[in-house]
Length: 182
Image (cartoon, rainbow, N blue to C red; front, top):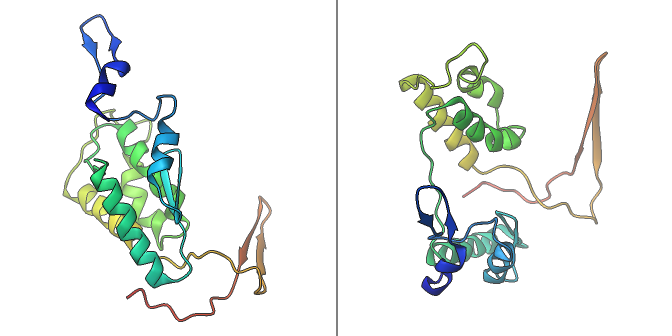
């Protein structure tokens, strides 16, 4: 945020007057400002960035460019060790969204999920085992997945399954290129 804009974000509490050092996404126009910084191959939606590319090699170039731009603008990612049940839930939430694409997600995340149960104290007991599972989940989320933009010119397949309690399906498409993740 520009220095001259910071006073415009000031708010008062019973203790003091505060102002934002960085742009808050609660500010009117924040998402528009964020979107203006994205290029033709990237689009910002709320606090997410979608990057579009036609090939894997082109995607790597676009990814480097977007990350460099975000770094230049002062954006950062902080992975901190959760200390309360609420913080553990806030970490598991986004991880759970991508859990469907992560092998053995439920098994690996179970020790962390156990920390959020009602019978557990609000301040979590975070030992080496929890740290190992936390690191493992982060590593899995950073690995290359098999997700891709569908090609409308290729056939789709619908995979369905049902039980006495529910029904589910998945729309898939055969990948036409060999992808090694290298």
